[in-house]
Length: 189
Image (cartoon, rainbow, N blue to C red; front, side, top):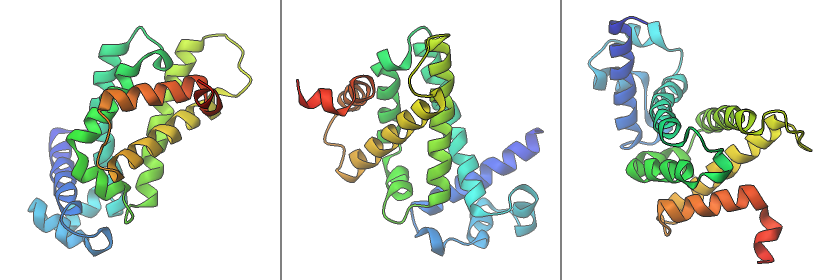
């Protein structure tokens, strides 16, 4: 993608991310987005067919940066032995808490939520395949990756809704513990 297209998409994405924190999702119009980005409506439709697609694309940019940081710091450890990776996720959410509260709150958008879970699942599946190699599993890796993604998403949502009562590190350790040992063994400790 050329530099102008990237810049235009960035302007649109930043405008929408600002608006999401100021207005309810269903009250945000394409005109609001283009006005905030100082672009015209036709430019919006050259790049996106809906505000949902713009939001998902913008969030994936955030996630790409986070995944890069995680990969750099945790390359040689499987994710299930690595609370640093989940800690980075919770720290990222804490840094952008206002945005995530809107996205994951009662007025959140299903399309975006599913894209977030799909993104986490793709990364988790890649990590699981690399870490498990040829080890046979009782559960398909695709299912394990969705479990990890859904669990992480649910924990992040709960954490935000409850005003982040635990540190990112504590949340990461609990998340890893639950994914590695399961729910029932935790209650028997």
